[in-house]
Image (cartoon, rainbow, N blue to C red; front, side):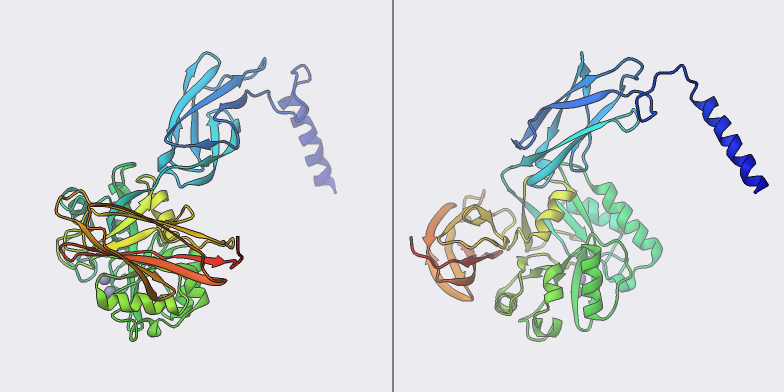
Length: 432
Ligand SMILES: [Zn+2]
Ligand SMILES: [Zn+2]
């Protein structure tokens, strides 16, 4: 009791010393602070490309003027604003963040001074060329992660690269180096390196993108559960025809939440892809090399990733949403949409008509598109023979009531193949 009373009287005394009565304080007892108002862009508006940001600053008497101010759309990158009278301004490149609603946030160096509003980012998707499966001497490949990243960027001239050494062979120091090398290799708008690993069991191999750890359960169901919890993206690797690996691709509701990709690089793996789709998986075809030699991203198969710009956020968002295609051609651009939703989308609102748009473009003079095959619910339903380098195909379907999926396969004059991600939808089956 005695001790308690002493402590109480000391703290009352302390309060008087900290806050002398003559200082005018706001009701919450804190010193006054500057107030920020985002005057541009408008809250709820649509933004694209370079976004001009204007912030009005009100500094009440007794408050400190901010000396630094930074803005971002829902996370990295942050840009510095410059002062112009009572306004602060900056330009933010919105193509570096995923499309959709993003929180525009402005913060100052002063304590807790910030402002925010939600804007809708809407930028066109570009095709970026990637290799998302390769090895170094940290497992059964050659050289070091730093060599692989330098080669992928400077020699193979990839836009996106992921090194995926067998996690069973990687120790703690190597895991540290794998991550640090990838982080260092990233350059916003220029080159994206995604940290990756390969889970390697007799059951089947899967790549893991953006894993928080190199220690993963060995049992497939426990592995799926851990992957869902870690919010990573998984890919079925070298599936053969799909009957032997990954439990014959038996459908797993848990697995379908987290496996978004499958290697589809030849007609045999195309059978596995068709099988997986029929069994109910929602996956995109992917064309990485799985190279074990010093030729990262420089063989004869690639992945095209559809994203507004080159940033880790954008590429992970594209992979998580299956916005990619497998390509045996190094630079053929391929876009496919239904009612404006890009390849890989699971359209959840029932539709009556499906307006399909397929766009193909190859910068090389000889790379003419000779054939586009359309597959619906596992069946070949249409064949186009455009015999052009630049292709725009449009077609409107009125599908029967129920669930459907449609994807396209492309053949070039030299025999190179491309496989696009499906779009899944529910048709209402209602007449006009
Ligand atoms: Zn493998
Ligand atoms: Zn591998």
